Length: 63
Image 1 (cartoon, rainbow, N blue to C red):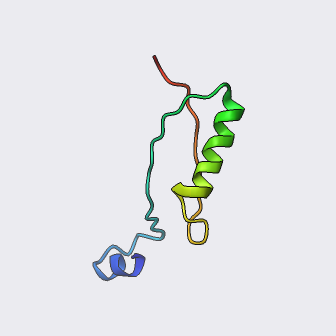
Image 2 (image 1 turned 135 degrees about the horizontal axis):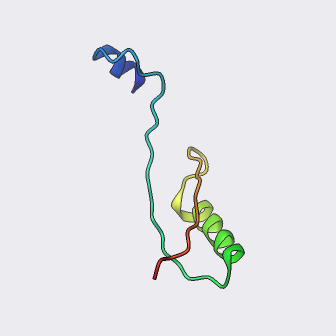
Image 3 (image 1 turned 60 degrees about the vertical axis):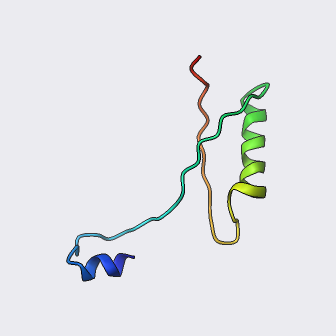
C-alpha cells in the first residue's frame, strides 16, 4: 500500500495502517468483568490472532 501511494506521487507517506473498527456495547458488573469479556471475545471471535493484533478502550455508557 505504501509503495502504491509513493507511485502515485505521495512520497511524504511513511506509514500506512489498514484495519477494522468495531464498537461493542455490553453490560457487566464492573470494569474488570467488562475487560475480561472484551479480551476473551476479541481473542475467540472478533480478531484473527494469527495475523491481527487488537486493542480496545472501555467507556461507561452515557445514559
